[in-house]
Amino acid sequence: MPIVLVRIDDRLLHGQIVQGWLKTIDIDALLVVSDMAVKDIIQQTLMTMAAPSNIRLEIKGLKDATNAVVSEQYDKEKVMILALNPSDIFYMIENGAVFKSVNVGGMHFTSGKRQLLYNLCVDDGDVESLYRIYCKGIELEGRVLPKDERINIIPVIEKEYWAMCKVGK
Image (cartoon, rainbow, N blue to C red; front, top):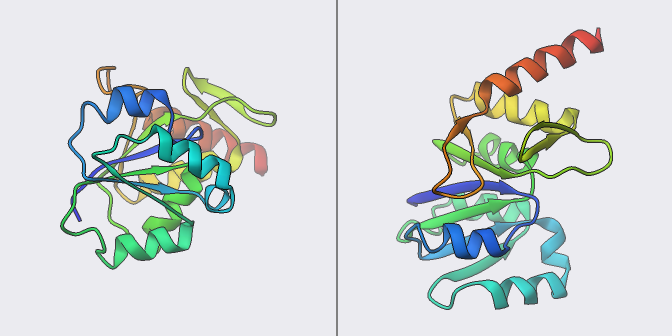
């Protein structure tokens, strides 16, 4: 499967995705990976309404999405994968998905998270998952929109990971 973009965005499908990314990248299908969205008919309806009619939208739970990617279900399509968080992306990788790069586009502040960059708010689990993704040799780039400068977030994640390890001792 030619994966055009793998993106972490806790808002899933929203205006920046539709107006920014989907008008810039050439894809046939958008795979939304979210156990919560699979159970939420309202969220599914809103995403279906937001998705351009020329792009097939699939909303799958984490295990089903991973199986679809690994079994090359989309091998004849250009696909964008959109996931809620880094742990879901790491799960996919650990279970056979092959990604060259992950765009960290929108991890917003919520209770229990700390801000590392403009669009990167994390908790310890996020840091660990991002660090493990990096350890697999996968590029981590921070960028909200395609025209924004690509920011290598690995140094920030590494620093945070090692600081976390020191505190944990």
